[in-house]
Amino acid sequence: MKAIAYSIKPFEKEFLAIANHKKHEITLISNNLTTDTAIFAEGKTAAIITADDEVSADVMEKLAIAGIKYIITRSSETSHINKEAAALFGIKLANIPAISSEHAMSYDDELQETANQTIRCLDLWQLNKCIGKACVCAKGCRAVVEDETKETA
Picture 1 (cartoon, one colour):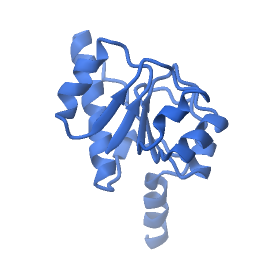
Picture 2 (tube, one colour; picture 1 turned 90 degrees about the vertical axis):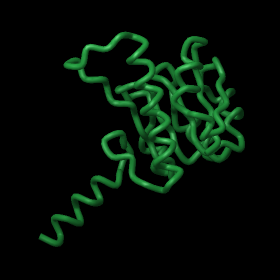
Picture 3 (cartoon, helix red, strand yellow; picture 1 turned 60 degrees about the horizontal axis):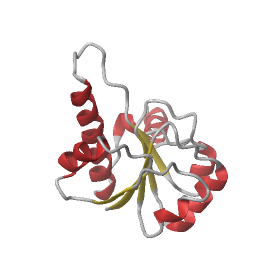
């Protein structure tokens, strides 16, 4: 899968490279995602962002026009993403859930785990599979599955 990662810090590059194992073609840029930088997503299928990237309806539209079908935020917070616009443009959303505090991890281990989960989302989407708990779509597949279960009960 071709992806673009916005707001990448120099120290994050190695963690993504290790997790990726050259499976996906990921363009890494340090720029924040804005209406002006959304053009860099042209020809990509997925965008990887942070909580610092404000994904308004305008940005979502530009990403959709560029070809983005998936967005992963490297944060547990998703309020910076216009979920309704994502649904309107058919863009699936995921976030990297917070790492459990019961597991004592070093900062480097947390960064590697975030990178691993990011690549796992890309892997599953490439296989056209549900990403499970990482899904934050406005009307995600979990809601559909739960509704179908209730109807058959």
